[in-house]
Image (cartoon, rainbow, N blue to C red; front, side):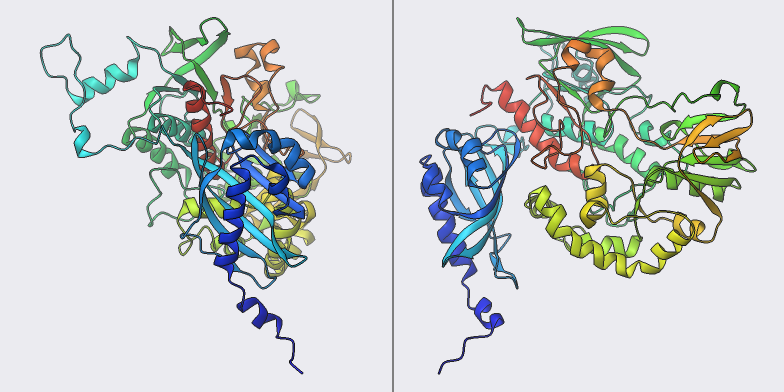
Amino acid sequence: MTETPARGATIAAIDAAGIAGDWIAAFEATAGQGDITSVLALFAEDCWWRDWLAVTWDLRTMRGPDAIKATAGDRLAATGFRHLTLRSQIPARVDDQGIITAGLEFKTNVAAGRGIVRLREQDGTWKAWTLFTKVDDLVDYPELRMTIDEGCDHPQPEDRGARETWYEYRARKSDFADRQPDVLVVGAGHAGLTTTARLEHLGLSTLLVEQTARVGDVWRQRYNNLSLHDSKWFGQMPYMPFPDSWPAFSPKEMIADWFEAYAWMLQLNVWTSTQVISAVYEEGSGRWTVELSRDGAPRIVRPRQLVFATGAHGGHPQPPALPGRESFVGTVVHSSSHEGGAALEGKRVITVGVGSSGLDVAEDAYRNGAAVTIVQRSPTCVVSTTNGMRGSGQLYGESGPPVDDADLMFNSYPVHLFLKEVMPPTVRRTAQLDAEMLAGLNRAGLRTTLGPDDSGIIGQSWVRGGYYIDKGATQLIIDGKIKIQPGEITSFTQDGVVFSDGSSAPADVVVFATGFPNMRDAIRPIVGDDLADTLSPVWYLDDEGEIRGVYRPSGHPKLWFAGGGFVHSRWGSKLLAIQIKASEEGLSGH
C-alpha cells in the first residue's frame, strides 16, 4: 500500500510557476476578450480583486464573483488585457498553506502595470483567491527620462541675444509670467512634493505653492523632538531615496532640509510665502481661476487641474473652545503649532491625545524639565522600535526588496482581508515580545490596544485611532515620570483644567494633539460650500476597504486630494499623476 505523501512533500511537488503561468494565460484569453463568465470561472468562491486603475479607473476592491461582475464586467472589453506574463522579480512560490503567490505584468489598451495573484486549489482546480492589478504607466506617455540624444542644453528664449544662465532660465520658468501651469498643487509637504515630481515626470507643467517661507518649514516649525513616525525604509520618497547612513527615524531638521533639497534637485517650480485665497472652476474654459497672495502681492493663475496636498487631513486645527478658556492665564495650543523645547522648563504641561504627536510632545516636555500629564481619551496601539520594525522588516528594511516591489506586495492584499487575517498573527507575536513594556504601561494607567481585530498600528491608523512606535516616552510613563489622566478636559480654570471625572490639575501649557479637520472641510473657504459638498470625505476606509478621497476621484473631475503618510504619498502620487495625465490626454475611463 502506497502511503500518502506528507503535506510538506506534497507542497514541495507543486509547480508554482507552471500553475501560475497557466492561470495568467487563461486570464489573458478571457479578460482580454471581455468574457466575464469565463473570467469568473477562474476565481474561487470567496475571492477578492483589488484593482488600481487597470479596469475600474479608480481604487476599488471587489469581493466575490457578484461584485467582480457588477464592477468590472462591463469594462473588461474596453480595458483589453493583453501581454500578461509572470514577473521574474517576484518569483512564483507556494507557502506552507498550499497557496501559490506570483507576480505578473500586463498591458491594457492604454496602460502597463503589475500585479500579484494568489491561487488556491478548489475542487482540483487552481483558482484565484486574491488578485491585485495596478497601473504603473500610460503606454503612450511614459515618465520622462533625459538621454544624451535629447541634448543637454536648456532652451533659450527666442527674444534675447545673450545666453540665459541656468538660474535665469529656472527663475523665468518658475515664475509662470508668460504661461499657465497645467496643474496647481497646494502644499509643499511630502504629499505635495512627491505629487509635483510625478506630474513633472509625466510632462505636466506644475506649480507648487507653499504658505511658509521655506520648503520644509512645515517640519521645521513643529515641536522640538518631532521625527518620522515610520522607519526610513517604509517612508522613502520617489526618485531620491534617503541615504543609507540616515537614522531609522529621521529627525524633523533632517526631513525639513531634505524637502528643500528634494525640490531643488528635481527642479520643481515652487512659490513659497504663498497663500490660496479662492479657487473657482469655469466649465466653459475647463480651467480654474485661483487667486493667490504671493509675498503679499496678488496673483492669479489658471490651471486646468487643482491638487490640495495640505496634510493627512488638512486645515488649520484649533484647540476646542471649552468653557473657561478665556480666563485661563496659561497657553493653549494645538500640537501642530507647539514648539516645545527649553522654554518648557519648570512648566506644568498637560497634553491631550496618546498618538505619536501627543507622546512625542510629552516626552519633549519632560526632558526639558516640565511636569507632564497626558490625558488619554481612547486606547492607543504601542509597539517598541525593535520589535515593531521586525514585522515590516521583510518588506521594508535593510535586507528588503526594492521599494517598488515591496509596495506591490504590501498593497496586494485587500485591506479588509489584510487587517483581519494577515496582520493579526504578526501583531500578536509582536505583543508577546513587547509584553513587559505593555504590562508596565497598563500598570501606569495607559490603556493600550492591538488595534481593530488585532490589526496593529496599520489598522489603527486606517480605521481611526492613535499609535506610537516607541522613541522614549514609554519608559517615562512606566516609571511614573509622565502621569496618565483618563478621560477628557471638560473646562478650564484660571490656572488649570477640570477633567471629566471631576478632578482638576494646575497647568501652564495645554497641548491638544487631537488630529486635524477633514481636508474636504478645510478647503471650504477656498472653493465654497456648494463645490465642497460634492466632494468625497477624505481619509479612513470606505466600505470596500480603500482610503477615501485621496489619490483617486474626489467628486469633481479636475480637483484632487493628496495626503497621508510618506508611504501613501510614494505610491499614491504616481497613481494620481497617471489619472491627471490621462485626464489631460482624454484617456480617462479608457
